[in-house]
Length: 519
Image 1 (cartoon, helix red, strand yellow):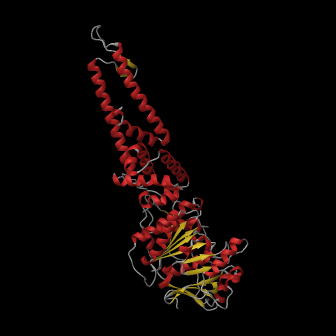
Image 2 (tube, rainbow, N blue to C red):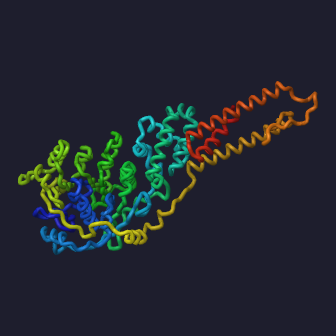
């Protein structure tokens, strides 16, 4: 295989290539901390870019951003290139890169809408139980039925308040709606906001095709997600990446097995996706990984331990780069055995022993060849990267962001009419209708000689002795109105406390105000 049909990975002692035609059969980069996983990711990203294939990868530690800059001459890199017979072809160069950031601080903001994420992933993100997830599904179903757009978190909050107010009515049509579950979801949304989740939901939503660009020289764009701060909200990180995979699957056309992938997706810290994941979510991941290959997308999971990946997903990963593992515990020993058993055996290599002896920059490598058959595992010296080892500076990052074709597209938030605005308009209209009805009632009381409510209290008209209303009838009318007002005020105050913000109070006042006429 040549560099025209494959990506040079390293030497063992023969050259090891990753076949571009089989690169969409997915892969795994695994190994203990500090063994060279990030460099393996970097050299694969460089190889795909050189082949004209766009790449998406998460920058967990912040040093992968250096891929956008020309590498700095270092003796150990040049020695490695010489040791593997790569010295004549090795050179330092930068690669076309676009920086992204869910928080909007170190790259172009990435947003999507509540509707696009859907109730399954959102329930995972909010760590909801089955009952709470059921209520969330009712919220989405009702929004669809009533034509209400769920774009951002305030839309979702408004719909939750709306569903809570109509709990008895909706339970007859959609199933039980627990107000306690609504309150629990509202509290989880507050936690999500503190983690920066409000930056992720909204518009303009990401156009997935912005990840499929190539540079002016034909090399694939390397899309780098700043994830160092995002890792403080691991659920948001994992849900975002799974949503991105789902969007790619839905948006891209079927292409079968192309000569090279349309996009390669590196999922770093992959264990975060599967930790405590419900069965339905694992099944969704397995389905997406299995089917997205036909869309020309290769998915490469990067993790410390192969046991972090469920077997149903691990079996889909044909290209393997296994760095050193340490067997300090029984679980570590099982991981070593599991990693060794997933490779096609090499009679000249004791795989179990070699996994624990690998040095930094060494790996056991097996790639797909021929008709998708894994190659015999080889102990490989990984080639040195051509781009910088280490992060870009703040000034370099700003320059790259401002030169990007995506600059200015996602930086400004757009807030069009959606569930929040529609429900607020309904509330305001209900309140206006209530005020009109009150005015009509007071006018009727005036005509009937009833006392009229003013800001200073009740003001009695000048009745004669004969036509003045009896004390008893006045008490009955006043008592009915007072009890009605007290019941309404109590209901409003209770609902307002459950919502906990000014929007909620205004919404509840408006929505419940329309019910006042029925008391």
